[in-house]
Image (tube, rainbow over all chains, first blue to last red; front, top):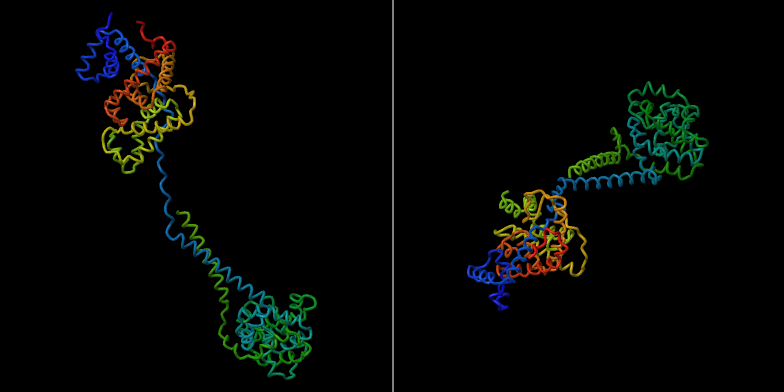
Length: 343
Length: 198
């Protein structure tokens, strides 16, 4: 069948609009003109049929399966702000810890490194010697260096120190033996060297081991009874307990004196004891050693310690600070952990 | 589903509401991307990029067809993917993954499909995909939207950011080119999809 529209441009015009014709997207005029052409053109009819076939195939194409969900991830809620005060608690913990270390460090240095420092506290010890009633914890510590000093210095000094306490049971040589004896030495250079046997009593106090204990307070209370009881007690017991080998003689008296100072305090005026001690100290010329000097030197200013007569502070301020800081560290540490968990 | 309510909520930053929109349109968007790109992995990337971009710019949406707005975004994402693909050409061996529960929009699913029919349709799909790959991107997108997804010309024009005349001409050229390709491959098509003789 021959085409009515042989013009190639007519075919091209129709061909271009076949797609829109399929979708009814032509204007009425265009559609009428195209349909008129199609009726007489088998070529364009075939083209239209193949185009419809193509479109139908495309529409039958299988759809791909959805591989996964494309929903966007819901953001995780922002982290809660740190609990109020967390920073402060942490800082406080750090500061308290540092301060605790500093205080403890200073305390340790003053105790260990400062052997000479041990001679410093004598004033307090003096006061105790003068007034046996007051015995603080403090003196007990300085006593060690003193003991050592005595022991190392010369055995000669030790026995004489022992002699002193004879009448007045040990308190004189008490805790800070050296300084205690010193003040009295100067004035009381009297040859009151008491009988050797009498020296025993001061060493006797069986409570020796508890020299740091509350010897002093109890002593004033029952001085009469205890004083008497103390003296007879073992002279030997303390010695083996404390004194090792060579320095036994020296060390024991010191301890004994310190421990015994309490019980015998009231009955015997401190001065008396002092005088008796003094001779021993003075009478020991062979001990020019530094230790001995350390014992004697503090004598220069004896009266000052009297201030400490009041029922002395039983606990050193350093200790109070250490304990307080320790609890502060624990408190702030716990607070920090607690607040951190709340974050 | 109240699409406007979800859109408003999403514009206020409610990502859960936006995800409701994603669930409603993800199949269409992925299918379009897959048709245009012809590769599953690239289609996934384009789809994800499209939704992320849509969420970021949802405040720029001021009414109209939300579906067309989404299609325009995914179309641009597909163009980006095609540019990448041009720089690094790869031979896609992806098999056409067919979702039995989600047939092609134009397919008549009234009657259940036999395994043979299913296999034949897979062959047809592969042939069409190869034919689409021969088309320029703009024509490909237009044909996919109009013939596969069934959008009218106005919607296609809105989705591609063009006018009606451009859609007509692109679609016409795309159909002609695909017809030429399929006619050349007709012997490879299952019998029932071939043109009737005459």
